[in-house]
Length: 330
Image (cartoon, helix red, strand yellow):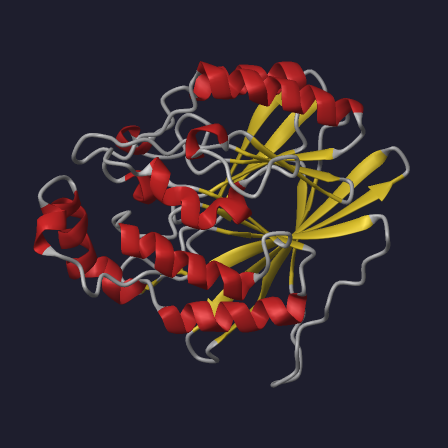
């Protein structure tokens, strides 16, 4: 990971709480969560599995129902009460099979994380497991998806890209979720969405905002297996190279990932968060989320990333690592 400085967290007395970041009016804290898979499949009808969902159900029954734990989500909620981020970004995969009841259940969970003003959500591939009316089901989450200048309700097809401005931070949400063939979990953005993204990046850049792009699929080639890739990642990279961004956040990998996109002004960090609910001893995956402390220092943005991970021993999240990130200067 070039141009970053890492430091491990100092030991604290047992039972003590982690320090709450001290922020100034020119500062902003953003928690990035992903791939929570919050829902159960209780009450599911067999007829709902007569498509690609049968494969997802088998995966859930064999593994996912055991490793994505709601007690970890409860610990996550408690930790967020301590760290008190100014905003929370959730980059998709709140459900398992994208069933109608799952969207309702996930919406109830979202309310516990915060109000729509405090939480921004984009969909992941598990929300688009099959093509049948998947986008219409997002209506349960519209207040968490929609741009600031939209009405409370809008057709799901018109939700993205979304633009939400919080302080001096512009959160630009994209939808890479697309129904795909069995054994594939690819995503795409499409020309229309990329065109609007270019406009939003240009407008918010001229306004002097720090631009955070939210996307579910990792947009850098080689980050994930071919069958799970973003098919138009090259077109996305071209938009970023031409119009700029300060930070790109994604999910989908269930792992900590760091890559970069090149621009004339420097390299844009592209950071993937692991699942914030998964504890899988067979793959060494452990629930984590990233907390970003954003500050304006003169004419430069300063960004620190705190990694907070779950401990099975304590049943709590704690700070594992702090990293200072170098951002491009547009």
